[in-house]
Length: 259
View 1 (cartoon, rainbow, N blue to C red):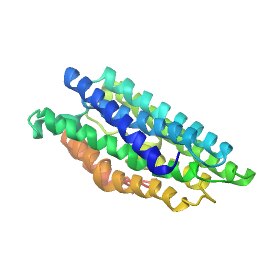
View 2: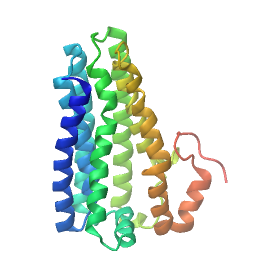
View 3: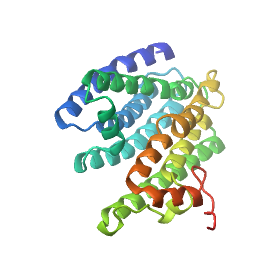
View 4: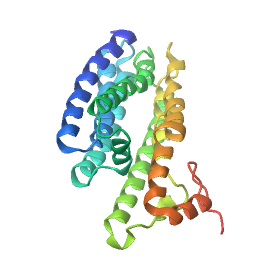
C-alpha cells in the first residue's frame, strides 16, 4: 500500500476512534482521554504503516515494534492518570472557555485525529525504505529510542511520585530530571522521533522522516505542550512556579541557575 492510501485508511480509523473518545469524554466530563487515544493512535499508525508498507520487511518490523512499544507505554501512563484523577486543569480551563460546548469539543477531538495522521508521516518514510537497516544504523536507532523512552518514563515516574505525596500539594517538582528541565518528559518525547529519522536513512521519502522531530518541537514549544502546561502551573502554583521558571531551563536539560 502506498503512503497516500495508508494515511487515508489511518484518517478513517482515527475519526472513528476520536468519535468514541469524544463520547466517553461527554459521559465522564474528562477530556484527558484525548491524550491517551492520541498516543494509542500514533502507535496504531506505526503498526498499520509498518504492516502495509512497500519497503524492506526488517525495516518495517522495527518501525512497528518501536512505534508500538513507545505508544503503549505512553498511552497506558496517560490512561491511568485520566482514570484515577479529575480532569486535567488545561481541559477544565478549555471547558470553561467554551462554556461546555460539545460541538467545539468534537471538533477538537477530530483535530487530534488529524494530528495522528500528520505525525504518521515519518512512519511512511521508514516503511518505504527498500533497505534493511545495517548494524550501525540499527544500533544508533535503538540507542536513541532506548535513551529517549527510558528518559521519558523516568521523568513520568518521578513526577507521579512527587504528586502522590500530599506534602507536595501546591509545590513544584524539582526532583530528579525535573531539576534540570521544566519539561524533561517533553524533551525525551522529542528525542524519540530521531529514532525514525535514523531508520528512514536510504528511503526515497527520507525527507518526510524529518517532519517528526520538527513538528513535535513546534507543537511542544509553541502550540499545545509547554504554553498550556505552564499557564496551568502558574494558575495553581503561582510564585513557586515563577521561581522555577527563573531558575530552571525550559526544555533542553541543563544545570539550574543559581538565585
